[in-house]
Image 1 (cartoon, rainbow, N blue to C red):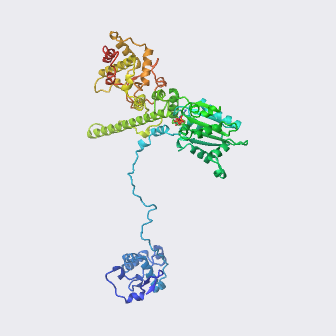
Image 2 (cartoon, protein in one colour):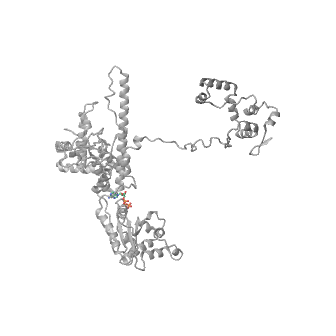
Image 3 (cartoon, rainbow, N blue to C red):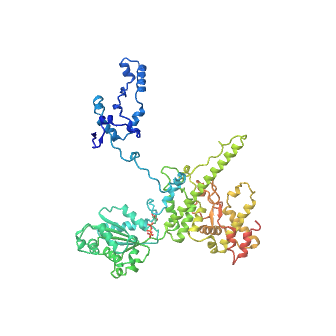
Amino acid sequence: MAATVLGKRTRGAEDLEGLPVRTTSKRRTIQPRALRQDAPAVPPRRTRSTAKRLGQHPDQENDDVKKTLETAPSKHTIHEEQGRSPTKINSHFRTSKLVEEETPAPIVEFKTPQKNRFRDALPKSPVTPRHRVQSTTPTVAQSVYSQARQLFARGANSGRLVGRDMEREKVSRFIEDCLESKKGSCLYISGPPGTGKSAMVNEVCQEMELSTVKVSHVNCVSMRSARDVYSKLIQDFSDDTEEVFKKSEAERLKAMFVPSEQTDKLFLVSLDEMDHLLQGDSGVLQSLFEWSLHGKSALMLIGIANALDLTDRSLPQLKAKNLKPTLLPFLPYNAASIGNVITSRLRSLIPVGVDSDPKFVPFVQPAAIQLCAKKVASQTGDLRKAFELIKRAIDAIEQETQSKLEKQIAELADSILTENKNLSSPSKAGAAPRPSTMVNYTVVTAPRASIAHVARITTSAFGQGTIQRLKGLNLQQKAAICSLIALERKRREFEVPNTPSKNRSSAPTVKQAFDTYCTLCRNDNILHPLTSTEFKDVLGNLETMGLVGEYQGRGRGGTLAGGSDVRRTPSKSGNVNSTPHKGMDEQGLLCFVSQSEIEGQIAGPGEGILRRLLRGQGL
Ligand SMILES: Nc1ncnc2c1ncn2[C@@H]1O[C@H](COP(=O)(O)OP(=O)(O)OP(=O)(O)O)[C@@H](O)[C@H]1O
């Protein structure tokens, strides 16, 4: 027996000779080739060139090799050897001293394989996905509408604030004055939610040179208690760890904000939603205001909340001490300002260099923006609400466009199948219009949300159904709706059934609506009609309520309700304020109220008049 490097005892050549061959294990019966006396040595491989050098014909050489291979143990034998455990092979070679001497083979190092042979076969072990992997359809997920939607998502950073120049100026001046005088002060900004207070303070602070000032923006909603504000300010401003155990946080802050000695250090603290601090210890807010209004103050304090009189009401001691913060109220946005913000955000999506009409607004038609703006301005003036509505309008037009495309594709597939069936007819496949896909649309060409989309959305968003709004109408407003419904019904009756008619895809104009209204009113002197201007004002009011809307034309695959008109002629699209007025007589008009809805709401005074108008006799 001989020992292997690993100390395992293996059988030497001598031992092998004396031992009986076990027939049960085939592997063990096979002797190493080197030990087999009958095994001829495998000649070294020779190439054609070496054969030539030796003066042999290459084919003769091949013959020799063939013969040798016939007599030599087959490759299989070698495989069998290779199939052995490397440890065994290793020990085998070490014990074959004789062989080593005769044929000095290169030392081959056999590594003991790890148990798991294929452990490292893959660079990363595969993991079975736990959830269904969803493949998103690029046409929908990455459509051109996505970027528009993102612009109106909550917290989206979408460029500089639009308008609010006076407020911007006041905030900047407050900070500049403090910097110049090297003295702190206090500014209290109030206003309803979504009026741009926080955004304005952040923007001004970012745009100003405040490298010499220590700045901290605190959102008081995120503070668990009023005292947490102290901790936050200490954390942001103080690097003096020595005083931690000597003084309270309030004392340390006071020493910083009202320094006993003259110092150039200035601190800027903005407290957003600061009314939250009043729920707990109002002393914290009181102290901060007092420090900022102190004669030696180094604290520029900007407090932000909704209530205009918060400082007077909740911090009465300030008044008692004759300390008055500068007040800056942010008034709610009016319809024009809301419209401007939305328009400017949408227009920011038009790529630089794209030649477009300066009045063109992508994704949402100007009239629809105006309706949204008017709606929001009449309710809260909260820009966030307006953004939400526009986002939903974009969703709606995207879905509508997508389903239209799918319908077109289905129709195209149908027509191809029909043509294939009828092989005798010449193929028109080449002539069939190819439906475009969502990815083919650009910011400029994508169908836009219309006033009808926004009307539908505002109706559900403001929780007031059509019925509710109809109830609040006066007689003339109801009369206008009744005559519009009568006119539309009459137009439908004149249409030839089952033929795509021009009439069906167009809407009555404002002029037609007015003429109809006058005709119906004068019929048996039912009602004294309004003048044209008065009638248009009535339509304007109804439009603001989302009961009627401007017809936007058919455009690219547009529908009566939500069609897109990508590039309308300036004369039509120039009407940013979509309220019908003089010169807009040819403007198409849509009524979003159905006959059954108005019928249910015309009970009471003037019911007879309205019913007769609705019947449309004499048209
Ligand atoms: N003039 C503007 N131009 C563009 N975006 C604006 C404008 N005003 C407000 N916004 C946007 O409206 C959203 C709400 O603004 P902000 O948070 O500043 O309102 P706020 O008055 O502080 O409301 P709250 O009182 O609820 O905190 C933000 O996304 C902001 O970017």
